[in-house]
Amino acid sequence: MKNQIEQLKHAKNAVILAHYYAPAEVQEVADYVGDSFYLAKVAKQSSADIIVFCGVGFMGESAKILNPNKKVLMPDPYADCPMAHMVADGIIEEMRSRYNDLAVVCYINSTAELKCKSDVCVTSSNAVKIVRALPNKNIFFIPDKNLGSFVAKQVPEKNIILNDGCCPIHARVTAAQILEQRSLHPEALVLTHPECEAEVLALSDYIGSTADIISYANESTADEFIICTEEGVDFKLITDNPHKRFYYPNPHPCCADMKLNTLEALLSVLEKEDKEITVDEKTREGALLPLERMLELAK
Ligand code: 13P
Ligand code: SF4
Image (cartoon, rainbow, N blue to C red; front, side, top):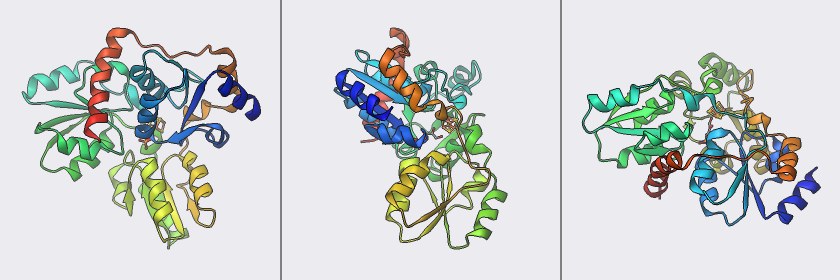
């Protein structure tokens, strides 16, 4: 299958992008593997005719918004991030009516419709930098309350209003699970994604995006790490650091949607070009503005 994927990719001038949470064998055949921010930048700069995005819905959608003239395919269009929808109807409008200077800051893990109603997008790797750079005092941070509260602690000069959404995978990690891993591996450093709950962040030695966690582990002189994010990052961590040890909360955090990106599904979509991502032009134009503002402010 890997050989067939290689051949089809070259024949069709396609590029394969995969998130660190995609299955290991898919990360192996991908041209670019990274966190959400890196993949959005790669999608924007790509000269391929076809982008195959092995991730979840909002990632494929963002690639299409940034590249209206390219064919964007996903191995499984049902791979969706549940958090992307977790904003109640009417709440953005209500917040805008309450605060004159409100900036709606939208985590990229969101639907295109929510992006349309927002002032700027962020990812977990640039949220602090972008919120700090905004002129607005009042910020409505959607949809993730955990990333929002992490940002609020780093940027105390802003009034950050949280929304009641979260990643079910990261929110399931508990402080007790971290303490259990720590008692088993007392030398290990705890590296955590900011989508985890505050009680887990409080036990962590480092908090960052998937790419930041991997860079931290690569550069650290420590040999053991407790990784509080989705287990897909393990492939890159052990590839880069074969002599280091990586442990996970028990049960391992696993995003079933990301795992829909199988090698079989990737081969099939490259062959048939049938699972194309489409975004209507009005929505695309509306969602493009906050995405481009993010790319600008994060520079
Ligand atoms: P990153 O920004 O680290 O890629 O995280 C994306 C994500 O979906 C985390 O659950
Ligand atoms: Fe969404 Fe969580 Fe899966 Fe990331 S891990 S794609 S935030 S459900």
